Image (tube, rainbow, N blue to C red; front, top):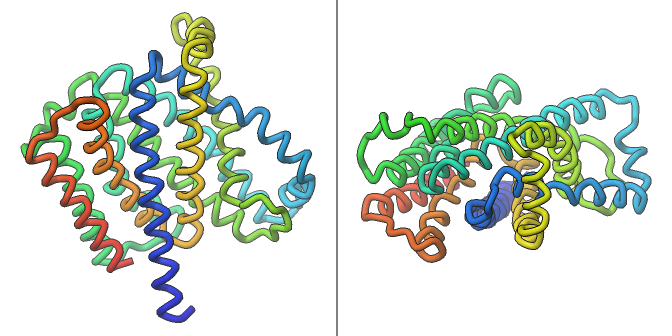
Amino acid sequence: MTRGTVARVAALALGLVLTSAALHAIWSVIIKQSQDPVAFNWLQMTPAVVLVPALVIAQPELLDILSGPTDEVAHFWGWAAAAAVSHALYMFCMGRALTDADLTLVYPIARSTPAFLPFVAGPLLGEHVTPGGAVGIATVVAGMWAVYTRGKLQLAALLQPNARFAWLTLFATVAYATTDKGAMASLDGLAWPASVPRPLFYCLITMLGGCIALTPLVLTRAHGAQRLVTCARTDSRRAFGALGFSLVGYTLLLEALRTTPASYVVAVRQTSVLFAVALGAAWLGERPGAARVVGAFVIVGGVAILGIAG
């Protein structure tokens, strides 16, 4: 590709990821407002049980594509299975974290993925972070920590008991970002005569697998079945509305992952912290201090560095 084409691809990926970040912040606020975030997250994933079979019936060529004997197909299903488990753990841990703690505590910890993803993406996916990319990632992470700590080093606060599921959410995010990248790389290598976009189909497949894997975790909670029934009665409309934000945002993210290293994509997506600060003030009535506002701008600066370096 020419330098101009590369620049256009990078600009498109940046736009996709920023839009995905805004939608993710909105989605997280909606989950926080639900009565039972864990049951709410499970409810969001249930439409895939109907949508995936309907899509396969409408486009049977999908089965031909993904049932072949090639190594690429086998690699895809291996990554997809790992992604389903990762997404189930993510949805469970995030739901528990938002049940136990405030969004302003959970979100910055859970979205600190850029600090850890390169250690996983490098060995598994063969990605290498350039010096400029490393500076951008470090800047984004520094801004995120400033947003959380209000400019102070509060290690004890980060390790408090009600933050444990936020940390588990972080590690689950690292896992699903890595498996999503591997799955999309495998899927991109297959011939694709179907009209449904690859990212959308993969998103639905992952939702279906995640819903199946999440079900035992939800049901083994105290009064698990009753929690699901109550959530379905009271929060169905809100859950399916949240699903719309999630589906669009996640599909945009997957499209960006097709052409851009996972470390960069995940780092830029952490600008959702910036959107979350704004939504926390406007939607939840929170009052971010000066340090959090400065931290939000530091995040934007890190994104700019990533755009130049990437």
